[in-house]
Structures are given as C-alpha cells and as structure tokens.
Length: 453
Ligand code: ATP
Image (cartoon, rainbow, N blue to C red; front, side):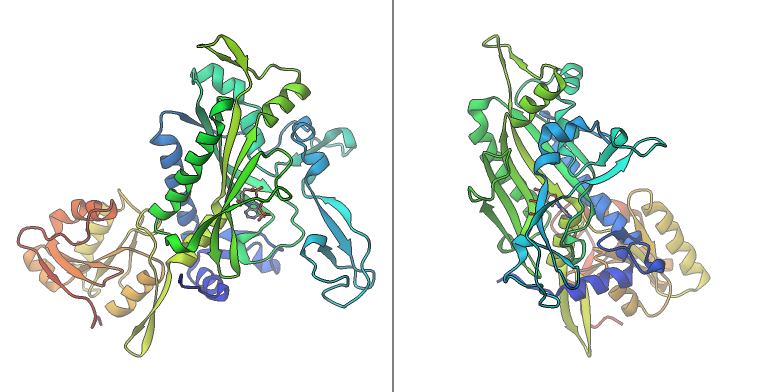
C-alpha cells in the first residue's frame, strides 16, 4: 500500500522550510491563494522544466507557446465558458454561506443546519475590465485555462513553423477560477498554473493518439519518482464528460484526502477549431497534402497542474525514519526535482576549511542550486538538507586540506564516498543525472551511513 501522509505534515514542512506560504500572510492571508517561497519556487521551476523537456525539447512534433492571460472576450463565448463554465450553487438562508450543490450530502446547510436556496449557476471566471472605464463593453476575463490561447494560435503556429499533422503545441501558464469550494492546501486554489498540450491529429487517428498520451503522461510521473501504486487512470463517465470531450481520463494521485485528479487527458474532437472558426469567421482548416483535402484536426489534450504536481511530488517523497531518539524527516525527491541539488558543508568554521568549501561552493553553483552551511553540528546540517530533499551533501574536513579529497554523502542511504575534490563536479553530475549511485571511482572508499554526528 502507498504510504499516506497527513496533509498537516506537508503544510507544516512547507511553511517551516520556505516552500509555500499563505498569500499576503501579514494581512491574514487571502483565501486559497499561495506564495511559493525560496524552495517552492525552485521545485516549481524544476517541475516546469522537466515537463518542458519531456514534451517540447526532446520531441520534434511539439512546439511551445506563451499566450496572454487576457484574451478577446469572444474567446469565451466560442469556447462555451461564458455559458457553461458554472457550478450549481446554493446559499444558506440563515448564515448566508454558499455551497457547491454537488458537494452536499443533505438538504440543509452543513454549517448551521439552515434552509438552503434553490441551486443557481455561478460562473467560475474572474471578471475584470480593460482600460479606465468600467462598463460592460470593456469586460475581460482572467483565463480559466491556458488551452484557448493555443487554439486561437493554431493557424499562426502552423504558418510559421511548417509543422504537419500530427503535432502539438505546449504551454505553461497561470489560470484563474473563482472556485466555490477550495481547500486542501494547493490542491484547489483560485490562482494556479497549468501545463497543457494540445495535440492536433488526423481525425481517424484520434484513438491511437489518445492512448499514446495516456501512457506517456502516466509514465512522466513514474519516471520522476512517484510510486506506481499511488497513481491510477480513471475514465470519465458519460455524465461527467465536459461539453467538448468525446472521451476523458483523469490521472489520479492518492493525496492525503483520497484519490484526486492530477491531470486530465481529453479527446476534444474538432470542437475547439470548429467553434473558433465559427465565431472568428477565420478558416482554421488544415490542408492534407496527401489527399489535397481540407480537414479539421482532432485534438488530444493532456492538461496538468503545476501546483497539483508539486503537492503530489511532495506527498510521495515525504518520509520519516527513526534516528536515535529523534525522527529523521526526509523528502525522497527525484534529483531532477530537488530544489537544492548539493549542500557544501565544512566540518568547522576554521578559516582554511571555509576557504576550500567556499571555493567548491562557487564552482558547483555554476551548474546547480547549491546551499552552503557552516552552522551547528554536521548531523544537524545533514538533517536540514534531508528535510528539503537535497540529494547530496559535500563535506570538507581537516583531512581534505592534506589529501585534497572531500566526502559526498547521499540522502536516501546516508552512504558516503570520499573522492578527489577535482572530481567532485563530474561525479555529482553523473549522480544527479541518474547514474547508479556510488559506483566506486578507482581508489575510492565507500562506507555505510548511520551514526552521523
Ligand atoms: P477538478 O475536477 O478537480 O475541479 P477540473 O477537471 O476542473 O479539476 P481541468 O479543467 O481538467 O480540471 O484542468 C486541468 C488541470 O488543471 C487539473 O488536472 C489540475 O491539475 C489543474 N487545476 C484545475 N483546477 C485547479 C485548481 N482550482 N487549483 C489547482 N489546480 C487546478
């Protein structure tokens, strides 16, 4: 069974170590908005980078895009968001709290037991106005998904890149939803970040590509270290299917509150291009050079969340181990995702040691995010790095001054090797890029972790 960790432990670790803070905390916070601190920002950058590398950089059938958050309001008429992007809402006649109708078990207010109004639809898009005059004609919306920015740029990308079907456009960016029920930390917030692919295919090949992307995306989480048993694919029932979708699966992760969606993979058919062609009056056809026919591609959409991924990676990596009288908290984050890759720790603050350590620190920082720490006992410093998921610590001791060697200590096993300082960078590089841990260099020495002070 997958290990389940309580959400409070994750929230507390994130707060304590500077991964995630409540938004505008000094004013008491803003409901379901979050600020990513010094470590959180690195984790998110690494998630985005890993996604971009897998879906854009390493593929020749994909290109990237960064569309504007504010879009022409007609976009949302064409997409169906203005009409259909709404949840049924009920209000308590006594305490005036509002609830999502779908979430309620009974017919009364869960807070005070009061009588509820009939459900009415509540649009989830944030509305604002463009320019200095606030009037209906100037209304614009904060995008509730990044996808539409891709659809409206389909012809631009086609014309400028000469891509032929099948090909995809990938985008990472902020999205906003005025969610009625929020909570569960960063799982459901009102401002979040999506990583979306719109993959354009010939209509008769949609099933094949849909299955391909299901596998590909599931694999991405597993390769980055999420336990297989904490993931599942769940097919949407007919009732659940969004208005645009022919078929949809969720990649669910077993978060502390149960199975929940990390990513949705939908076969959107030709819905989006047909709608935007209709509302814009522009042709969004594709000329099939083999048959000389104009066709409207089908779209397969893998749509993931940066924040939900971050939560899943954190929950899955969280671990506690007995450590003498204490408990060692550690994050088994995949090295690709770890906010800090290496920590440089001189055994003492003696000038000569510090000088060597700082030189190594400056050198390693050219490749990775590196921490330098010379406070408190070495055991304490290792624990601090374990808790934030740093895969490797480099320790400089007095012997290093003589033999020009340093110790690398590995987070998960606490194993240590001693190697020449001149080989530190290449050794760490190999380890961070996934070489089997601790293959001994000639003349190197390995010993088992534990008993660290
Ligand atoms: P849910 O059913 O949980 O509301 P959804 O089906 O509406 O999610 P999609 O519209 O499919 O979500 O959005 C794609 C992805 O964007 C989701 O899988 C999720 O990772 C992310 N996402 C959507 N809404 C939120 C939110 N409020 N907070 C954080 N991430 C979100």
